[in-house]
Image (cartoon, rainbow over all chains, first blue to last red):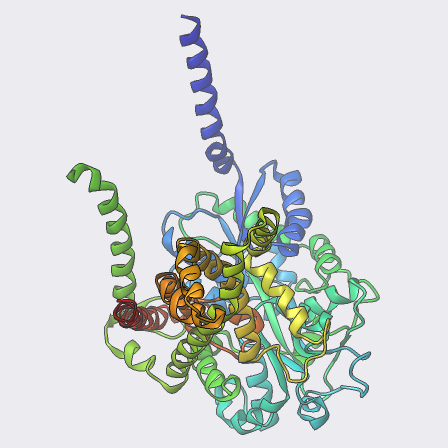
Length: 345
Length: 262
């Protein structure tokens, strides 16, 4: 009798433990975001403030850009997450597949304060910005690099690293140098081919990029400004160039609400909070990324730095924003051309 | 008896379903800038027969063959020592050294090679990091423990009496090795080579990290197509082609090795 009683108690406890995560998820807002510093910052800066304001806990699903996209696709119509952080051109894939719901801008009043460039579509809004620009280690490179065109100097042969997962930045820059843009990218093909001998390595992840810089294997890179500032914090003396000839290529990370979520109102509230002046000011400090809210307070040491735009004029003059649609549609062709002509021996 | 085979059939069904899904994806039209796919097409197979993809297949086969050969040559003496050293302590030490890389993980091991090959620890006379040479070193190191264990198992099954008999009849140590030990260890050599060749064909982290994006093997190209270009049908088509090629190569090698061993 006693044994049976104990078994019932144990079974009940196990049932409660098994059901607890599901119940927790039902009562909380689930946000999909990249891991590491991105998740930590969003949790600390936005998540806690959201819970304090609404009483609703925030849970996170972390993963790479494409892992999360694949999961979202599998769960289409019955999403496992309510909100999603991703880059603006990848968000286009979510939208084209019907994975995002249309935003109700009346529920996001703070969107009125953000730069027009951050309003990416009626489905997704920018939350912070950065640039891909030239970054180098002055202790290993004895000449000043001040322009994109400096990358083509013979003295930098075998010293440069570029991202190979997305060559759109350097392709666009080469096209701009030859009088074209991302739509007429073929104009820069010959120019880009001249850079081939200078490339030491191609990186696939942010971590690889930072390792190549730390070890000095590739002391000059087309690099994400956020990663460069992170290296500076770690004591690696890297210089983030504000190119004098053409601006850095802007990247915008965005938030969208998953179609089919049952917590659409809470998701709108989360976005509204993320775009508020106070939270944007905190995000700038934590991520070293540019705020999208033009009223956000930017620390003096970051003002004017590459990727940090504080006025509407700076958004226009200090960064080049590619057309999302063209980027999404042309990326496979760019990668194919880049692999065949630049990566291939 | 049939009931006992049920779990095996279930596992086979799951694997078969995954392969069927992959095959279905490979026949769907890729729409750039969208996750939606078009109708059925063979265009993906035509596209992945382009020069750069064929080069990646060729490089993979060459690197796999070189890795297998080098691993065999380097692993054989270690395996021989492991199987024949009379000292139990020395055998244990060798076994620990052989198994140690298994416990460090592929990524950590490969990152260690990034430092070693990148002129931060030693200065190499020729560039090693981000070249085929560097990738080859990483692949050989990755494959050594498995090859050593397989060869040591095969060598330990050879009765030393045969070698002693050959020596007592006047054969030099080199001749004993060539005419007795080596032929008798052939089953281990064949197994080890097939396993190393097969898994090197699907190597991913080693060429990804040590190749610096310049050395592309089959798995890297699949990742590039699927995860970076969002071209899932293209990635599926390339994976299917690579799978067929790998199976054909392994069957051919298996037959050849079987004939030689007989």
